Length: 222
Image 1 (cartoon, rainbow, N blue to C red):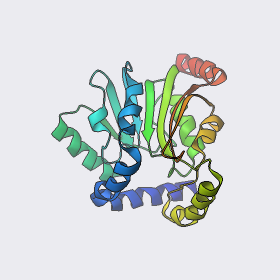
Image 2: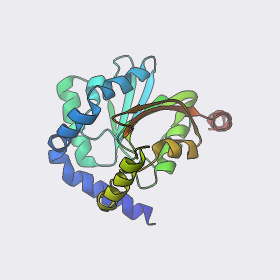
Image 3: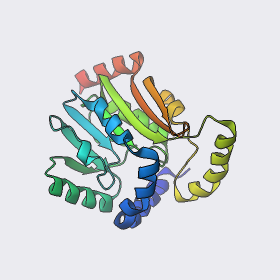
Image 4: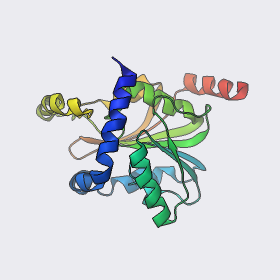
């Protein structure tokens, strides 16, 4: 697979969608994610340094903890422009950065919390992206995710598999097992909540002991 080509296509796709993205996702937000973003961000309490992966148009800005320094990145310049305007209007202080989830431009163990909402359904290599999230977080920190996933229910899961043949053409994978990908990335899941018939999951994870020990050594050496 040409991952760089996939990344370029993903960037171009979200640049095209940026203008009308908030309007397009509003029905799904109301049906599937109402209240869950706030629940997700409640896990960030006490974190001094927070990284949001895939900030998009800034739909999470209202939930940013005022006592934390938040860095927010996205692959799409057009999405970041809209997030910047929202941050200015809301009086929110946030460092916005153009970057690829698969190649985070940070040293090991920089953040207390790395967080993402509805991101790893479209990242070309989700395991690599999640491994980067685990690398960027402190050994005693956390990775927190809100994602739509393949349903555990047999019939519903098969329906999502069929639907995925269509959505994958546009870079959206509706049948990913993100919890399994989290574990493949070397993270240990500490909390897993299922919502909306199991199609939506809230996951909290931390670097496993081996990864944490390696991360500590890497930070000291850098």
